[in-house]
Length: 322
Image (cartoon, rainbow, N blue to C red; front, side, top):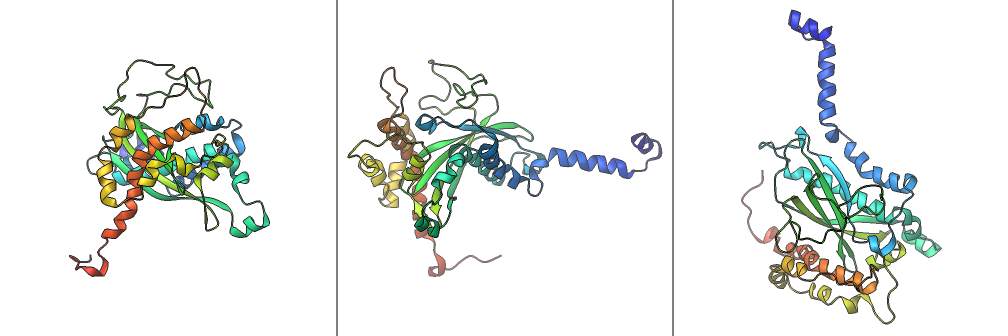
């Protein structure tokens, strides 16, 4: 009746405005105040209190967690594409899904237990760096998926990679914690994105790194992964440093990092995993081989530490302050 009254008398009843407001809110729910906080912390509660399935140890360490989203109108720029700045809030949620899935059930184990450890503080993790490369535009309300997985790690930092992918363009082989879902199955033929050419479904790629803390004390990443049951037993007489020749090179100068980085992506693709025939076991050697394969890319992010060296500060004039 109110809508009919609007067309008959030309007046705008309050009920119609209320309806328009509800429609606007529904179409932009993702951007309302505190919704980001809910999206960020919901996975922690879901995996801590409601999810009974856990990752199956080391074999799940490099598997991605997939979450979906859309780009509402309030996230679009003047080109009516998803604004570059809004990618990072989505990436926060995607990484929260992965970390919650891998570590939530083990937070009690990772937290301080002895009196001496309790004095150091509680267990926590913090984002140290995030980068994003934009490949293709995302249109208003276009659905997309964020595939987030562990890329590599060194002693201090855990590196995660997120691929933002057009929805329903790619499927994983199977779903470890959701076996009722239909995956792509065992595909042996060459697919788009294999080898040198990037997958055309990829819209953006992000790499981030996290540090684990007990109070203000940094916990080595391999210690955290071992406590979480994600690393296999380490062979006697072998340490992470001894198997990480590429990691040692990451302490080189920024110039050397840049030179090495030119072929990083190509090199990473030229080092495929070679599990033993007939075996799908992720032992220490296979885990470290994949870690080093990812490190060839992760070291480019590690090289950002040297960017502080080019801050001019009070050594040079500035154009102005506005």
